[in-house]
Length: 458
Length: 97
Image (cartoon, rainbow over all chains, first blue to last red; front, top):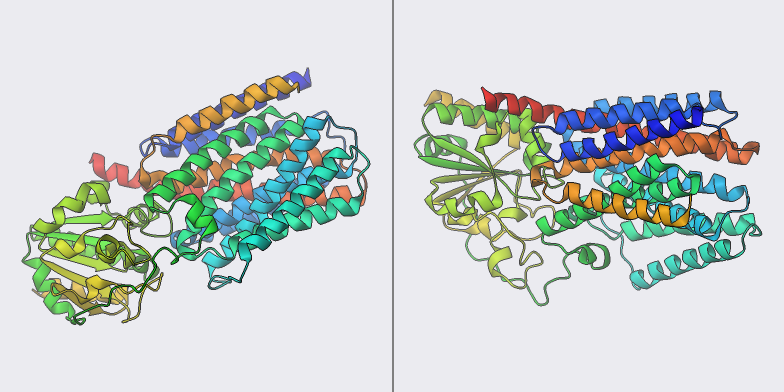
């Protein structure tokens, strides 16, 4: 009887997950979606206490949930919106680790399993462990604990070798039924851990969102596979749904960044162009905040292009204040968001929403790109590569072919920048040297503040 | 679980996941990734079962770690997603005014 109730609860839980995820795919119902999924989760977890296979360790179980839950709750509440991507990576890694640990417990038991189940346990362990160590590296990179990319000769071959070794040991475990040595199992897990690390260290910061999304899908798959091992339909369905949804999401992100997923994983950023990038002609011309304020105040149409730099400087609130002042003067102000602005597709929209900028003045690349020629002033704040015309007209540039916001077509371009160096990717930006471009140097927030003050004084 | 039933579940769940995501606007990519990250937090259920029938110190410690990590995945995933989506709600309100 109890078992019947448990299965029914898992069924309702899985249904709530699917419906919740469906609602999360539209901005209007998104918030209800996560609450539904949350209800499903709480139900499934509580009923599991009565699961017939659980016969002891209740106190340890509750303690582990309390500790893990409390740490995650506090860190999740405290994290700044700009740091969201690495937190997602961290929580995802924990999920992958959990799936791998489940596999470890089941495999250490050396109880007879069918060939299929044992294979699934081993594959889930492999995928989960890779997602675990890979996500932790992604977290470390985005958090700034680990800087730069690590590359060495023959890297792809060494990675492939580690992977093949891991698979071979996995196969050996599956084929030996219940007779495998514990050391084989241990080495198998170590190899999977190492592979996750090795696969992630050569990938640069700009590609990290795609990688996190991929590991998210992998964790889903690992959870699904371990669900088959435990005969738990809630895990199977939720895991596989996330696995396939995550795979598609990864493809969509890669497409938005114009970086095929194979390029992200197997080629190094900056390898695209052969030959020297075109030399930059002209010089950077400086301007001060008062002049910019005047230009914008008497313009008809202003487009603001925010980048991650604006978010780092916490300037979005000041920028919104400035926007409101311009709107009061009758200026038509729009925000143009590049798909990869921020650290992930959609991240910048979250950051602007946080500052209170309404949806209806925020536009995507496709919606706004034709409007630049009729725009009086474009204010680029904290963005760099996404407005680099080299992506359009220099075949030797590493970012050639990436869709960009055509800021250079506007009558005047103001670039707010901290200093004269190159950006995140280290690529020289031709826009900064254009005749219609003026540079406004300074910290994003300080500059936005100056602009607000200057506008008030006009 | 019989092999073919499992295979059907796999197939249907995969199609479902694919269908759900196929028409999603770019602005929701980050929250959606975070939301699906929360959903695979269901691994907590499996981790509890693993710990609940673990025998001996090694299995119990690994099971304990599994539950700890899984709880972190579920709770953290929820908190972060909820915070993000809450902001979308407030901008919706402004639009409706």
